[in-house]
Length: 212
Image 1: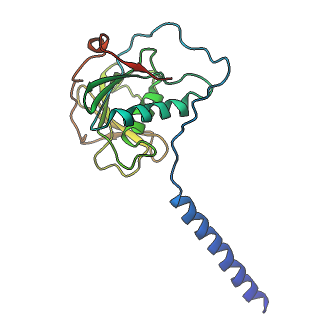
Image 2 (image 1 turned 60 degrees about the vertical axis):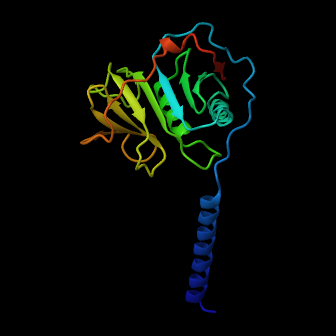
Image 3 (image 1 turned 120 degrees about the horizontal axis):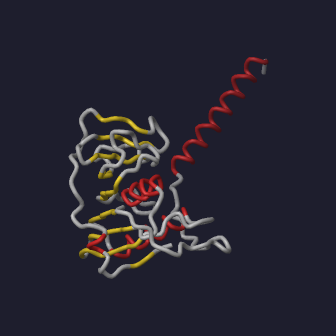
């Protein structure tokens, strides 16, 4: 075997290894985080923080929503409490989530995306979020700051790592987490803003379950 044949043979082996590795990675599914352990000595918030962040999820069983919310907390609360959601049952398969201790804007966006695309469940769920956007929040522009906004996942989404934002005066943005622009102004928003069907204040007297 001459040198050129060795090179060709070696190249074929390398290409084969790369293809096999890519196939294996593609076939590997993300696994839900079921580890409820937390770092020792993590301080828990002592006082509630007033805010209007709200999420409504539909067409999901109580067992599944409890599982999904807990697994999100398991992912983000390893070293500090970044997410302390409060789950409130609205009807048989419809639930509200509030955040009595508030939550960072980006984690709030991740939460909406995660509820829509939960790891370990082979389907997506209708999820919509509402909040007042702050100028200091990630991805928020002058057009959306200090406005009531609605967050959702596009019906035509194929990227799985974003949320869409529409302001109360119907200015729309796509907020990307990893792929593409972090904030992309939409010429024609897919949805018009709709106010939340219930307010955080109105939910205060309902029975609930807190997760951490």
